[in-house]
Amino acid sequence: MQDIISDIDIHQYLPDAIAWATNLLLAIAILLIGLWIANKAKNLVIQISKKHDKLDDTLFRFLGSLARYVVMAFVLIAVLNRFGVQTASIIALLGAASLAIGLALQGAMSNLAAGVMLLIFRPYKAGDFIDAAGRFGNVTEIDLFTTILQTFDNQQIIIPNSQIWGSQIINHSHYQVRGVDMHFGVAYAENTDAARKVIENVLVNHPHVLKDPAPFIEVETLNDSSVDFLVRPFCQGEHYFNILYSVPEQIKKALDDNNIEIPFPHRKVIVVNENAQS
Image (cartoon, rainbow, N blue to C red; front, side, top):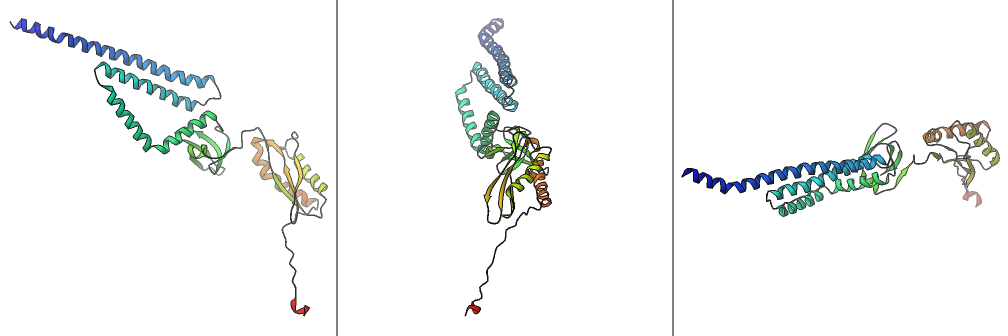
């Protein structure tokens, strides 16, 4: 009698056990295949950046990880479905949680979006000197949330990407050849051709000033007390600051040596003695 009852119990639970084991095996298979597909998707996205030198690795590593997590999310839903779990409510819960997290991290998300745009359009790269968000320095690192600058006095400045993307960006290193604008004034009594010749000689003898394109030296303004020259020598980008901070002193000394006056602002005051008139 007990053997009959045992056979009945076995036959009663055997289909459920087989179904559960089948679902378990299918879930494992889905999980393994999903992991393979997720890793393939990640590697495929990363390979795109390696095939194109102009694309940024940081962005595509992030996109690759994002693709992997998206695939794994679908895999997890498929695995739960195999065990009869109602995933509609889970998806709704995840959506609500994502919305709440997004609202809580609005600043971070705006920095992330700006970082993605910066890495796609690449208005600057590591090693460039830029002027952005009211700061100037050498770009040492760009990631999805911040840009890190190193100043001339060796300060590290970390700028959120949203502040950079939403404002003017000046990339001083974009072009290989740079023009260096400088202004010099001479007295009205001086010969402008002689002053131009003195300035030109200084630029010709400077080791970092290019011959082609030739330096631009012309009178720009007839000021209140001086005739002002606009002087624009051209140089390789790496020598920009050397010229900017060395040429003005050299021109000042050359003008002094040639007795060409550099005027300073002055005002003529006429005193009227009203008592003397009466």
